[in-house]
Length: 303
Image 1 (cartoon, helix red, strand yellow):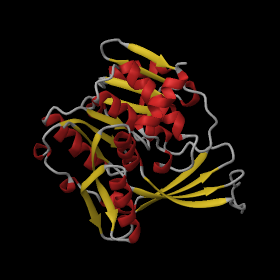
Image 2 (cartoon, helix red, strand yellow):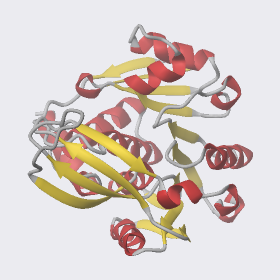
Image 3 (cartoon, helix red, strand yellow):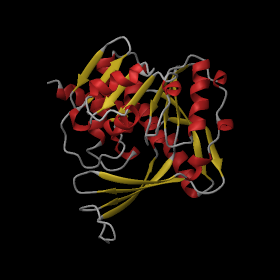
């Protein structure tokens, strides 16, 4: 059976819910604190698995109790963890503050994620049938670069979510099959401040990327490829409780839908529905919907 490989971060999210964000130097009262498994890599792996894909996670956790809990959470979602390594010290953590409008602020502590090395990446020839590789920027770039080159060698498509955003050379963009990024990341990497999805996508394709998928929050998403195909999908309107991991849910669901043979437009609708459902619940992985929930949501939206 074909599988998706996700290489990336595995974090424990420490989430504080507040009425409003604190001003500099100000102390405010929190309403609720939760410990929720997260990390962009792990979130995307869980989203893809819950959307119906076979998924293998490659990453690192610390030799602490959090590491054991994070691996258990991945396994519970159906993600293979045989390629997750343990590093001396603490697991990665994200300190997240969520306000009453569902918006968030996030501080990352890399922990074991920052200790992942290129030598921790298995030879892809040991995997029988890989549909795609998902990457993000919460692990060292030399590790991502090793993964991209290894995937290219075996003609496996690479989907990169460049978050957090970092400068990218044209040579690096040219070896990536698809970029999935939000408006802030797109502006940073493309250098375009016009905030036109069409213009940004064309700029990135002109620099070598084969496909670009821009997530636009409550305005939906925009897709373009080097063959000139472009399409926009509107977002589903829901009452947001917490936007944490909405982008990761979108990416994982999109990758799973594509692996299962859906046309691009249907993949975008499926991913948009998954992201919409995720913001109606608190937390990262705990908010990610199942394939059955996504299909039910789409059926109701179509009637």
